[in-house]
Image 1 (tube, helix red, strand yellow):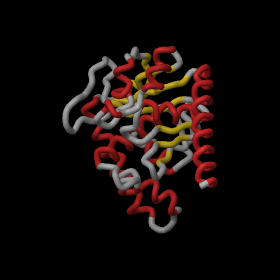
Image 2 (cartoon, helix red, strand yellow):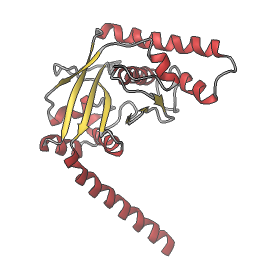
Image 3 (cartoon, one colour):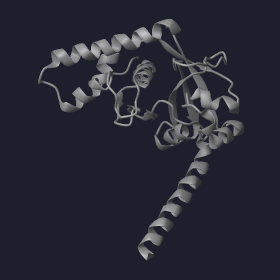
Image 4 (tube, one colour):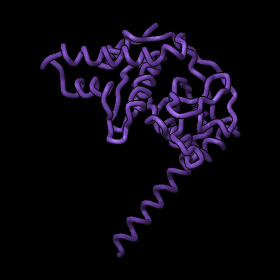
Length: 231
């Protein structure tokens, strides 16, 4: 049963949905940067922890299959953005500034370095998250997609950054907009689009690794603060 809409983005996305289902896929460590749609050059994107978790069997990766051809996915984004513009014109002064900002972010950048292509990919990712029956969908000022119990990082993040987000939220899962098709084909070339979405889920057994890393980070920060105070 479909969950009830809770945010203004939920209401707009509800008119532009495609059926979604999960498909288990086998991913090699070298493919992780493509699965999460990392920004080029991918060799500079941190993926060591993601590789370790994948090899250990503590990282589950599934492709989100959509009942919508690749050729029609850009049109869905265009339709969502047109609905956003119409809503803004018709809403007048009866809406909150927060709702207005959320709807504006369907067509405008959330941060200075977000390109038109990244905006479209962010809107697409939000539509898929909604299609997976998640609600309370919203954007933040960093270009991330939020929902009731989770978050998807900004477009182009690294594998390790994606898994940090997954661990920090209750569901221990994250969705990514990807260059990798479910059959393993990697989309390459200038102007390529991240029209494929994956769900990455962490096994609870991986908690100890993240907790250990968080402790090391806290200890480093404490040392830096202490040295500055001493100086």
